[in-house]
Length: 405
Image 1: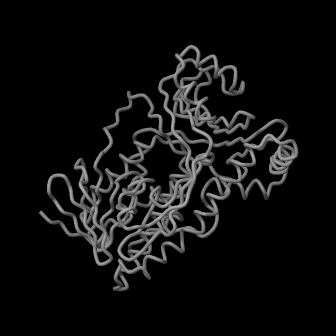
Image 2: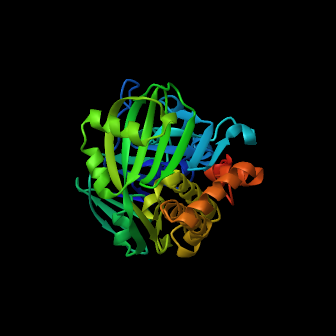
């Protein structure tokens, strides 16, 4: 009933399954544990509520591990333009300005997960254990174990926490976090619009809170409305006709007519960062390591960069004959990612606090900043490189380079 692995990834979501694929065809025996696999996709299904803005760097990772075709064969929406505005200040970015066909793609989270799980199954050194609940996690520096409800015990020299913001693996390893709840919730709506296919994602800042549009394929879009927890609860409870009227009254005219609300949901906003990403025999990736404000949609992107960086470190260390569970080896991954993630989290905090401040001088400064960004081409290109995930030192997979061969 015992199964042994070199690497056991707990959590087969978008990030955990991407790590498994990145380790595919290596000399490492990989276990990928996902207790709640996603339902299958059909083109007739309505769009899911949870979607992600997949950056160019993330698309490079997914292409290099062989999972991108599983996304394009289902559905996605490329976007060429991105607009941010408030009052008199605004800036619009376009892929043409940097000679790129797109700035990114909006993809349903379930479709990304399906594509990477589908790809993971194709590797001979990766075993997917799906649909079985976890009974317990036991961390030990020399090797950890996970006990499943069917009695199996999965053992591994290295256990990877890819099990979300409330990670059982992280808690078992005694790795603390710092963080706080934001004073906002997000109302998420999937809607039909009269605009037809759109190629722009936008964020508008209002005194009541930000509003955002993420285009989906066809005459559909994902709307995100940030506000106080009480106001989001009130809006979420409105009947469709009243909520449509609220959208018409509060959202900008460029949204176009919303003809139908297909789905609705809400979630609280929290910022959280693990005090450390690694210790002997364990590594944290994705939300287990960090939870970020979703204003710029970077959560999944920095998670995929985590997966790419950890895979790069593990494959190189194994080739060199090193013990992949050593903290000294895993520390290379932490040095690659922690500083960059903290920078992104800090920038998102600054956006939240600056654009959430109605004080006159602060409003003037941020509108001035948006106006300057619109007029200064170097500033625009730098901002676009951040949005596309192409800034700074990138893992090889994010640059389109294979780790094997």
